[in-house]
Amino acid sequence: MLKQSDWLAEADYSNENFVQNMKDGLEAWKKLRDNCGLDVRGVFRRHELIPFVLVPHRIAAQHENTKKLPMLENLRQAHEAFKFGAWRAALALLRSIVEAVLRDHYRAEGTHLDERIDNARGLPGGVDKAVLHYLRGLANIYLHLGPRLEGNKFNKQAAQLEAMDEKRLEIEMVRLFTVVRALIEGMK
Image (tube, rainbow, N blue to C red; front, side, top):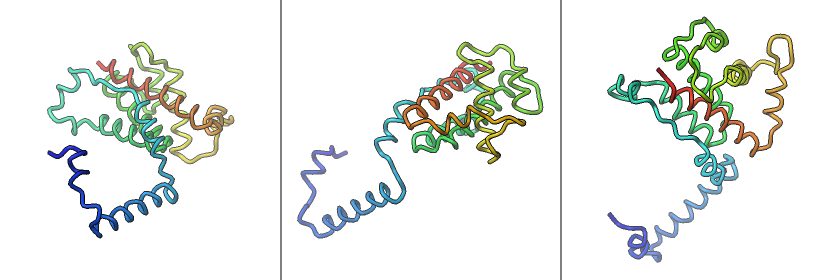
């Protein structure tokens, strides 16, 4: 395998195709940055912020192929959505993960997620029912495209989340990822 320095030394910079390929690459980069709003620095920053999740061995051992564990695929996609700045999509996937984990691993009874959260027993340290309800409420607002109302009252938390600057929003999302990590790592 060639190292980057070897590859650069072997490149033929006078080759007409090389120059055209470089121009095409720069043009594609400009389109991604200007037309699609790709924030590469933000992607790398958010990638570093995502907490690593360790699935308990006894849970992973139940699935010979981790692709059969939809929760892990949802978690992977939540990470990807967050990295690329799609925090609403990440929030919706986190909600899905919470619901599945409470149902399948904490045996939380109930028809709806709010009931499952209320009925959850033996939650690990770092997981508070109020934070799970907060995550659920925020995700519901964006999933159902409803007004910023929950019941008949204005959801101040959703309004506050939308008003946050990028740095504060990232911190809040990392806090929610950390809660979901604790929930997953504490699975029974």
